[in-house]
Length: 472
Image (cartoon, rainbow, N blue to C red; front, side):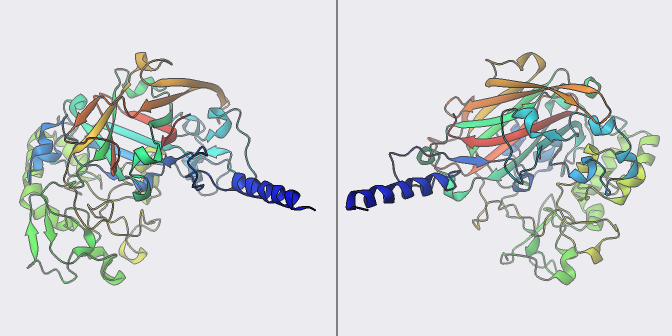
C-alpha cells in the first residue's frame, strides 16, 4: 500500500467512525458539519409542580398569601406502567385485566410505535410500545395547596373551572440553556386527539401554554426556599420561619435526607408540616371551616371517608403510589390511580414508615423548590409565552402550529377498531404569543413551564413525543 492509499484509508475509517457515533447531541466539533440538538421533555420525573404563571393570573404577584394558589386545579403527569396494560400481565388487578373496554380506552391503552410512526423500523431490542407522557387535567378538582374553601359547590367541586389552571415546570439541562448556540428553534410534539371521549364534557376545549425562560421556583410563594431535608430531626422549631403555608427551616441545605431512620419526619411536602400539623395550622383550619359551611351533609360524610379529601389531607399534597391498596379496594381505573402520584408528602418513605403493603417510592431524594439545584431560589418571571388552542375546530393541519397528522385504525383489546388521529405540532420559538418580563433573547433559557387553562371538563393530553429541537 503506497502513502496516498494509506491516507485515503485513514480518512475512510474516520468518516465511518464519525457516522456511527451518537449524534443526538452533536459531538463533532466542526462548524461545517450539520449537527442536531434535541432536548427530550417526555420524562415525567423531570417535571415538578409549577409556580403560579405570571401575566394570566394576577394572584401570581402575591407574597405569603394563600390566594396565590387559589386557582390551582389538579393536574397529573405520568407514564402508564405496562403492568396494567401488557397482555397477560400477572401484576394487574383482576378487575383491570378483565376490563377489555378499559384497556381499550384511548388515553390508557398501549400505543404502538407504528401507530404514530408507520415507516419506522424497530431496532433490535427496541420496545414496540411508546411510553407516552400523559397530562390529565381536572379543572373542577383542587390541586395541591389550593386553600380556597369558598368558591366550591355543595359537592366540593371548584366553581368556574374555565378560570382554573394546572401546571408543571422543569429546568433545562445546563449544557443546553443557550438555545442560540445550540440552534434550538422549535417546540415539537405528537399529540393524540384530545376529544375522543365525549363523556368527559370537554368539547369546548381550552388552551395549552408553554413558558420558556425564567420562571419562579417559589411554588409556595413566600420568598423562602422550602426543602424537606432542612427540617429538624427532633421536632425543634426554634429555627423555623412560619408562613401562611406552614414552616421553612433556616438550616444549611443538605444533599439528601439526614438519616433514613427518621426520614418520615422530613418527607412531609413543601409546606414543612406533617399531616397532623396541617389540621391545627390556622390557615388549613380556616380552610376546612369554610368547606364545612359550604358542603352538603352527604358530601361531607363521603369526604371524611376519602383518604385524599381535604378532611384527611388539608394541604392536598399527600403522595399515593399507583398500586395503592385503596385503589384496588375501590376498583379505581388506570388513569385515576395517578391523581396523587406527583404529590411530595410521603413520596420517598421507606417501607417501614408506611402501612400500605404495596407502597413504592415516587422518588428517592427530598423535594425542594430549587428545582435546578443551583443553591438559590429563582423568583423571576421573565419568559417567552406560547399558546396552543386545544379545541375541536383548531385541530387542523395548516393552523394552530399543526404541520402534519397521522391517522391509524387501531385494533383494541375489546376486539373493536378505534380510529386514532395524532397531530404534529411544530412551534417556532420566534413566534411567541407574548414576551413577559425583561427577557431579551434565547441565550439563557433555564426553565420551562407548561400549564393548561380554559377547560370546563376533564382533558387528557397524550404525547408520543415532546421535545425542543432544531426542527426538520
